[in-house]
Image 1 (cartoon, rainbow, N blue to C red):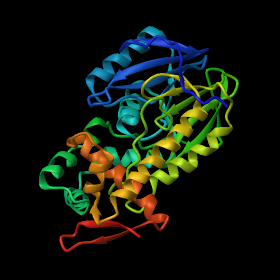
Image 2 (image 1 turned 90 degrees about the vertical axis):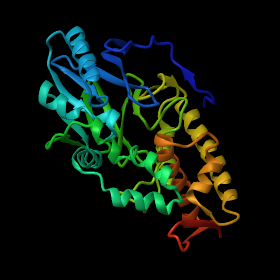
Image 3 (image 1 turned 180 degrees about the vertical axis):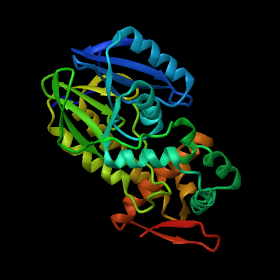
Length: 340
């Protein structure tokens, strides 16, 4: 088993262009309007039409880039299908426009479709989000920054997710680019994330579950406060260890790579260290924000505050479930965590 992650030597496509990464598979890169400034998307030539995998966020720039790519590479062929790995705005934000304007049918898992619909249609519940951050020990200034970057705040990056969709199940086989692709669901980063594995091409579209340099966000949010995303992430990743060595992984961020098994091992080590740091921070009663400032040494504000709170709660939940940490609200309503 390889113990290294190797970046594959493909040219990075400029916005509005595409690069071939496997027979019938094109790599597209779109800009994003936040710190993680790009997303990798995929076009697959099905012979009688094309499949798009993930969309980018809602916005005129993304639409313009897509229109140029479709005019250049599809040359009048039909975009017949849109597969979304998951429901976050950089992956599903433009699904409504793709379906309505380009006529592609949305394919995704039920959990991601439902979550995407909620993101694209629900109004922000201000009271619920403020209670979430108050319980975490955030100041008013912390809340003002984090609130605008909450998952509901991402609604501005969504077109209305289509009413109808084709449901993907774990273990389904779909035909793309003339090859069979197996749907493999994974959890933790989102509710029912779909990875797509082609044995004949030795390629997997990994979405956000498998990234070569950064770790995917694993957050507890207001919509499911009893979740344990870190445990779900680590557990569901282990089923991918049996995939072939030398598999080419096409991630949604950074660059295509080899070394999936090594990357899974790196995730395990990374989060083991984070759990040790989290447990040490609970020697005396501490709020989520006090623990977060031990886990994240950089300044926390705005978008980083949102992710820091959710990630810290995820690590605390893992330790709670193992009986290593207890939680008790103080008189202010701030939940204080302490080593059991």
